[in-house]
Image (cartoon, rainbow, N blue to C red; front, side, top):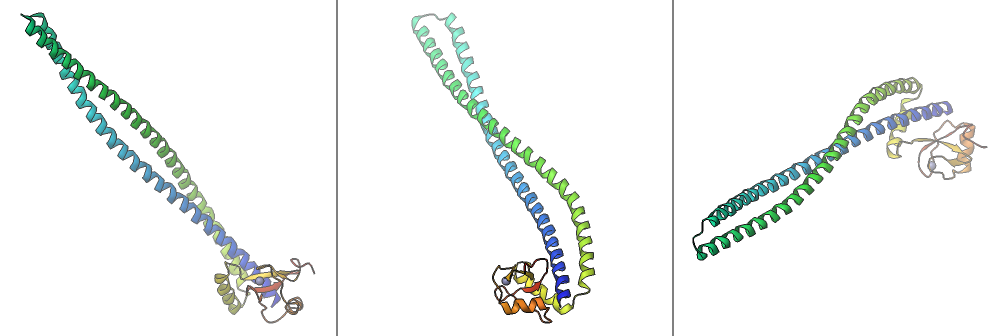
Length: 240
Ligand SMILES: [Zn+2]
């Protein structure tokens, strides 16, 4: 039984390594998913900023057209001023000119405000574009390295799977089955060494009787009374 348990502990070491490889792969995929979501978000933000910018530019163009109309009005009135025949006409033309100038000024002020808003939007867009580019680069790097890693993981998994098969063939199938059942319930650890009278799975003391039995080499399986894992006695792991 002792020999079977030592082999089983080796199988467990391999299973832990397999778990770590799968975890690493899972982490990679999660990172890629997170970066892709970020990219979609930045792209969405950029699209709405672009729409807002288009609206602002359209409004500015309208105002610019209106300013041009005002300028024409001013020029027309100034021309008229050269040919006025009386004071009444002079006053009317002057009044009209000053109204046109005032309107032009108001529109130009509005254009100024639009310019500020437009510049601000362009700034926001630049920031989003930079972030997007950065995330895209990250995604590219991650995607390249996951390809390399996948090859490495597959090779490693194949190696340790062969190793596991070679060891497991000398373990009784009943024991392997029991190991699998406990492993599922106990976070991947089903067999643990006893060290200085303590279970290395839950760090609780095991009854002295069980400890003596383990050292003598019991033909029955001995379980930790606290965490219910299979116990084995490992001379190297034990201090006594
Ligand atoms: Zn325990």
